[in-house]
Length: 102
Length: 401
Image (cartoon, rainbow over all chains, first blue to last red; front, top):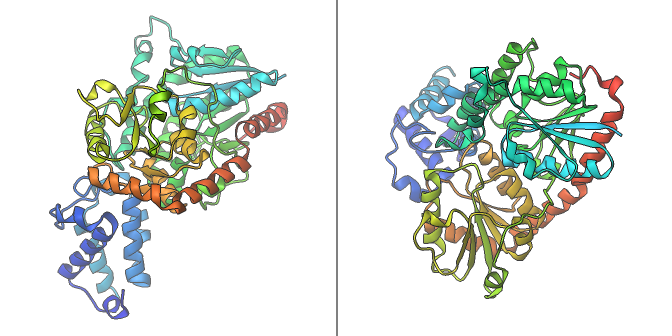
């Protein structure tokens, strides 16, 4: 990812598109085409991502935002039920809040 | 001579390694028993091994129905992270709670020098501590402890489930005692397990493969009739439901027109007709078969993955639940294979993935390297020697944990 993209503040739609891009990279384009990904999509139930896929998705966020956002820390603070119910909106809100507080 | 007792859950993958370790201990002149809920284990025990069956008084209503715990894990369709919740709340905790008193009464009767309990039979560890008998732990599903690193809060949740049961059974400690503080044998190699800081009491002994031949008919002539590449497709013994039909339908789609011989472990009645290049059997002599094959497609159960790597074969892993996603992650990380998503993959993806691992030799080379690391770790003999060492040092280690 280029440095310009990582430094500017993203609005929620832009964050959503970026998340979609990461999901595509993790699970493959052709699968994403068949899915209706919305902010309400949950990782486990709707996107059927297993734990290793969720871990690699979080690595992509970490690489993209670097120091700006402690995404791995945020994710690793989730207990099992929260992780099962994790959806895109929760991540978008978290990234949004991190940007505001900078 | 020492007296050993293995405490095993009714899960094939967790039992098999103990049969090999026990067989070596028996050959070396020790006395070995197995505490289990499953009467059928008697048929599998090595010669001289004693079956210590957990049985409860007929009058105790709650304790009578041991049978329902034997296949509890196969009863529900589970997938992904959800499955961990199911595994603990509906399988492991009830199973361990149910087994505890039976384990205690066998420990009192049998008086072993060393208990070897499975990492998911924490009731064994609790019983050993309460009765001041030293215990070792065998970690038959090493990826389950890898979760510490990858999803720490999930691990913490698991520990909390175990700690609550410990408390109920009289051990008030904030940490899980499932893994022994004197000897925890991790049945894989460091190389395959990956980086993770662990206490010195953890020993990587390599996979302990069950060498007792399976008495199953197999048509070897049919297997060798063609020179084409040969693969095995198996999703183990744990998933006995709808998963299977969907899965094998995709396997058929992937390989029916391929120049491959496909050995499938499945109930042949699952479909009326299988393609002509398929050999379908409910059971196969897997260890005898693997040396004749070129690749394996599996769900990422620890034993099948280790047996495949022990034969230096590349694989496609399609994890379904529990720790299998993490096993698949390791296979990919070491370069010995590819992974597909169980719910998402289609026939053509499986077909492409298998062609890729058959033709790109780097997969096989990586598998061979893991094989070397497994051999170097020592396996069954090394595990048995460790157990012998800890059985004679009893007084020193009485206060394990």
